[in-house]
Image (cartoon, rainbow, N blue to C red; front, side, top):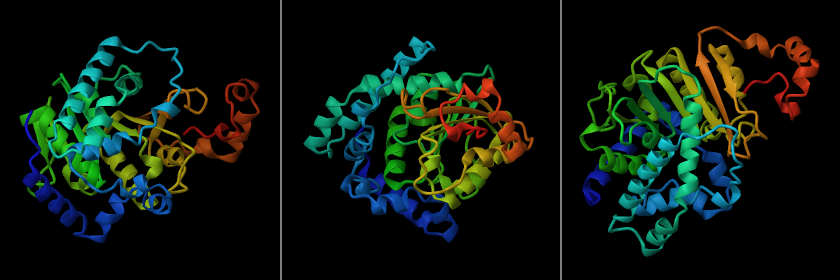
Length: 344
């Protein structure tokens, strides 16, 4: 396994910070959980934005997933076993790379070696299931808020039929993703942060591109993406960053392309925007929403949107919402008043 290139990482970190500070707009587009983390009494939340090396940062990031709080009730759908095994192999490979970091602390290595991998692999396989719930061919994927690179393991590990674009704005995670993608995908990996200012992502089968969130408007061509993935990220963005992201999604998506969102949709610590309402006005149609108990049985509520370009905001008119709410068949199918006429 190749060692971590500390010099290269430090150079990338410097470039990241310089690019972020280049304009005030960049900082607004990149903000994430700023107020919530500042108020958090937990030191792990406050220091999580700092890059502390490849293995140590990976241990910190994985510590955010509290598996003892995830009941993972069995789904009515059958998870594809081949996908589950492939994502597990990708996770094993990633863990091996994290542990191989000679600069990782003994505590981090012990944590990584003991980390429960089956729940994480199943978590990814569930996403793969819902991301392919429609029969639409998917050739290009954009993962917004990539975390530890879960979506890359779904769409690019041991397969080269999809062009994958990873977008993030958090320094610690961005540097972690850069190192991991380089190790997993080798010459298939392209870092846009260090490329020429006018460079665009290579949307060819098998390519894995890495893009800072604030450069999306320059780096990703119009109408070029088949599937956008947002897992546990949109509710955590301040409003300026959220608005920018949603505008970019509308710009880069192909006609009838897909937007997959999975989060606790009513927990919005950084904004008070009804994301579903904005999507309806921007031309998105809600094609699927997991009907479970607010998603707590599988962690988050998976929703699949398709882009038609038509304004669906009429569904938010009070008259329409009341009419739908009074229909017995509708009232019986929803468990919370928050759902009445509010397709999020």
